[in-house]
Amino acid sequence: MVISGKILIFLTQFKPKSMMQSLIGEFDCKVDAKGRFMFPVNLRKQLDASFEQGFVINRNLHQKCLVLYPITEWNKLNKKLSKLNRLIKANDVFVRKFTGGATGADADNTGRVLLPKSLVDYAGIATDIKILGSNNVIEIWDKNLYDQFLSQDVDIEKLAQDVLGNLNFNDGDDD
View 1 (cartoon, rainbow, N blue to C red):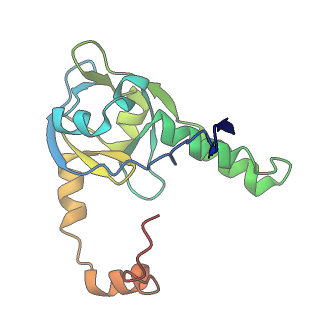
View 2 (spheres, rainbow, N blue to C red):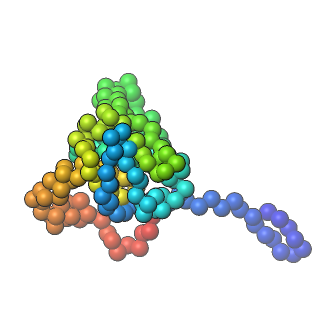
View 3 (cartoon, rainbow, N blue to C red):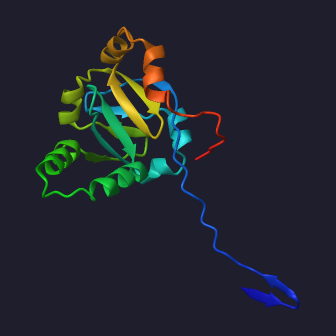
């Protein structure tokens, strides 16, 4: 607090709440013989400074694809994982299985990202890939596997009700 004459001025340190990135877009890319792909420019712009901080790449838990976590998102997730009691077998197995393939990934000076061979093999990635902005992470799919995923017969209306049915979209909550 600073007192200036008769006016009291309260100085506070304002620290804005960290905003979760909302990454969007679907991009066609190619993987070269060394396992590198050119990071999509539009997605790079969405990441802004996070792009330079690097990534962690890992297997997706539910699909044969890869997840590229901006390092800030990986750190948030890893902080939660570190709170699990590793003396409990299920926790220990989950953490090991989940983080086992995790690998640091940075773009080179031309904007290419190297995909680890073991993860490429896991995801069945050939030459043509789909890169998807998926909320706070980036998914990397073999193009053919992604096309197969999209062609699955899913009742999207029922899925929306199951997943979103209990959310109130009219409550004005911006968090």
